[in-house]
Length: 175
Image 1 (cartoon, rainbow, N blue to C red):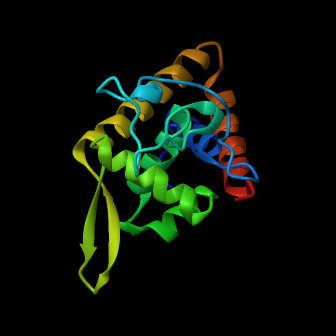
Image 2: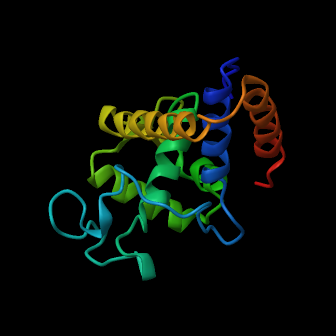
């Protein structure tokens, strides 16, 4: 977490971490859709699949709902650099085949890219593209705007207290 004295930014960041936190079984955090959700048909009007068949289950498309998509992008944005699929699976709280499908769909949508691991040519790493970064930034900005609107009737002391409590909750949330 980036340390920030602004309570609105701290609250938005804590809510974002809580929203991205997976539930047991790989289910997303709080439900919701936003401007990053391309639906099950992506931006080209057809389902994005790997190996010619869908993997979306009841939520449509290989990335499921927009939250699975955003969770992957958030993990990549918070990473110190490109990540192997296994590390992404662990951070997302899903199995490796599910993470591989999420990555494949994100690559097909131009939100992530695969690159060779410079220390081991047998491994492939996943990195966020500029388009993927723009989606993460837009999501974070929308979250901060919503928090600022919601806090309109709060005093400065209440905002600071809520920021402290939500940050503690996000830090303690089971992964």
